[in-house]
Image (cartoon, helix red, strand yellow):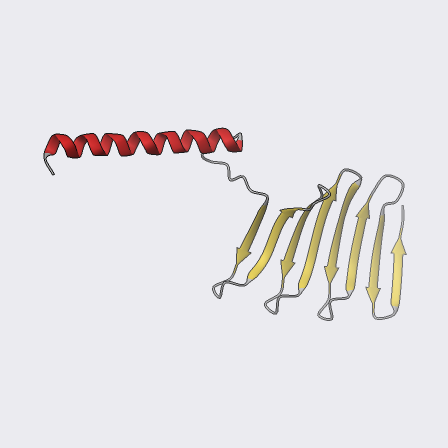
Length: 121
């Protein structure tokens, strides 16, 4: 390939790349290259297994789930328009600590086996 043709091909490739970048930024509504936008993000371990997932549920709630090496959920943190909650699960995937923050319904629940204690303001 001669030099002028190679330069023209490179310039065309650069223009195409810039156009694709601009189209993607316009589609996402974000032109800040320092911001990652997604509906779901997964953190995986060295074996490719999901260890954490942050996503927006169908009802609009934002939920962060963290998984043990066996794939079981151990932590769940959620936020919606009517409040938020935190759930810490034990090795049997039973609630150990649950915190709920809603207007007029805030509570901390502690569980161990069949024993349960609820703390309210």
